[in-house]
Length: 116
Image (cartoon, rainbow, N blue to C red; front, side, top):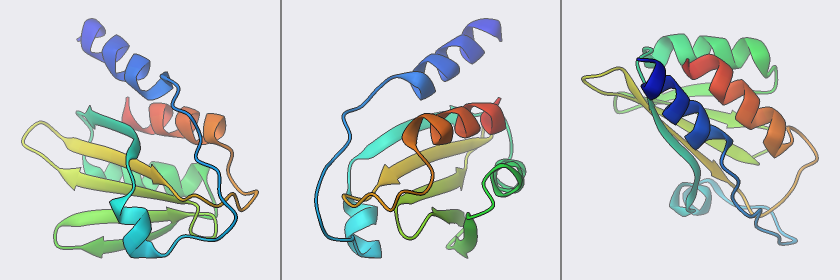
């Protein structure tokens, strides 16, 4: 269990280059972007969603075909929580525009905190 948590936190904290562009990204484009974070958690998607909404006041949740999506900032981050037989799969995608909202290090910390 400790090894799994170490691997989870390690995966969450691993760095990925930030995309840079000038225009905002639409939801379909955001959903098609490469995940910045992709981890599994033993926690239920509803628990992770509640935790993230407490930690990130700008997060807005919607449910879509069994998954929960949280938009963070003005279309800057998309967090998709999908139930699995183990708990949940967490996928975080970033738009190419920076809205000056939640910085990546803060979001990574919040994801790590809410998934463990």
